[in-house]
Length: 128
Image (cartoon, rainbow, N blue to C red):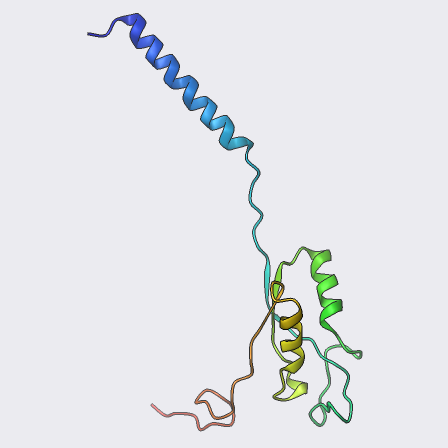
């Protein structure tokens, strides 16, 4: 049978171990959440070698490159972005692919859908 002294010694030891474990856990640094932007456009200037679609107007008047974007990501604390080719560049995604190849831990890319998929604008809308 337990004596009062053995019970209190056991209880005291248990409390000391539990509080030491809690202090150790509280001292660990909190992990920072990863911030990912799910849709960012980058583009080069319209040139004869790289023409935009007729009548296309970008969101900003000057080209917006991935090096500038990477600097802005660092300033804002954004870890990764998903690059989506802008509509004014047509079907091409080579510039986004270049960014992903150079900085694979910072950029991912969404490739344009082929225009033959059932959900594309040029395909026939299914009827139910």
